Image 1 (spheres, one colour):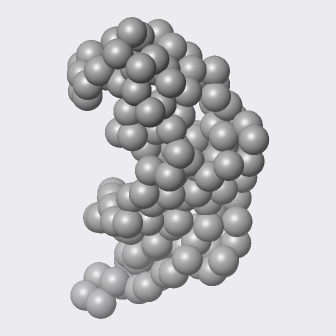
Image 2: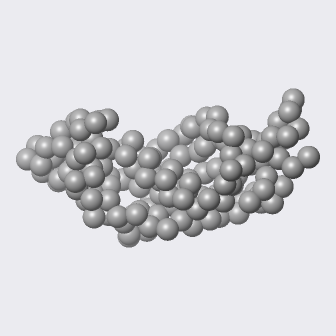
Length: 145
């Protein structure tokens, strides 16, 4: 989809992604080795009652689901900013995640007319339709001039 075709407040729903315990463990060992992600015994005694995914893992899955939709394709130049990241509920092994992505703003680049900014709000839900995370991204994409 081209910059000019993107509609403010248009919502896109991604496919689903099932989070596995092994994946939680392997991600956390590399990037967030805290007990609630890697130690079954300690995690079971925590407020979570068991192993949960790292918030960074949930963020990565959410971004993957958005990118896999390939709506922007090769018109993407790159990410500019991520803000207002909120981890609202824990993500457990075998949770099934989906993302609702909404374009909340777009702006032409002030100096370079061949590119523009888009702001996207990603709301991530589990299989019970409970929102587990949300984040706002600002991306830079090519424009037709």
